[in-house]
Length: 233
Ligand SMILES: Nc1nc2c(ncn2[C@@H]2O[C@H](COP(=O)(O)OP(=O)(O)OP(=O)(O)O)[C@@H](O)[C@H]2O)c(=O)[nH]1
Ligand SMILES: O=C(O)[C@H](O)COP(=O)(O)O
Image (cartoon, rainbow, N blue to C red; front, side, top):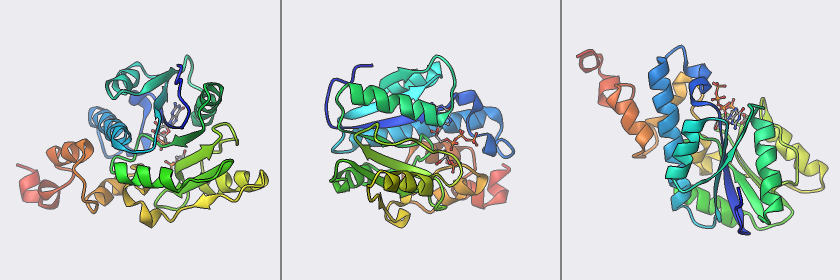
């Protein structure tokens, strides 16, 4: 990958589609879970394409199909030869972007289908300091749904349990006061779909995403989900 441009690049790490979203396995059959993973990834990439203030998007994945979806949405690709986990995948993207001269990196997960272009543009516009770290916690306050860091390889990554406070602590250890945004100001971005109840939460957001259309067609959201009489027809 040669990004060949300064500015802030979005990075979307994507796990193998067949292995993703195991916490939904008890409520969704594998084919629907995989369709959901693809739809969510497309929604995130479409929002990034429409957002202002980014130099481009990079997808980091070991999954060939995810690589094709990335290219369809005009994203660059870092194709991982082996699966090494989320933190090493993001660290590799950070190093590559720094070598290519990128000013910063915005890491977004592929499971936030309701993220809007406006939320992304707003977050990037509010990131005014380098070196600097801006964070948007997940709606549960624990995960990291957006990590904007400049320069890209400033810090180590701590995705996993309680990652948002760990990322804030890493910035502080470098003498940087992180900007931790209120997730309530970024409702689409803050809603990562990890658990069955997160699917219901999607209903409360006014969005017309591929993900929503898929879940409505499957009777998991919308009128068919609310009315068992219709659902079982
Ligand atoms: N490149 C890469 N991306 C990853 C890896 N693990 C997770 N991701 C991505 O990181 C983001 C957040 O991941 P999680 O919320 O943990 O998603 P998940 O691992 O599919 O979910 P569970 O299987 O339920 O834990 C998603 O965009 C995943 O696709 C990895 O090992 N490599
Ligand atoms: O740190 C994170 O945000 C995780 O990697 C993903 O967290 P989750 O389990 O809340 O999705």
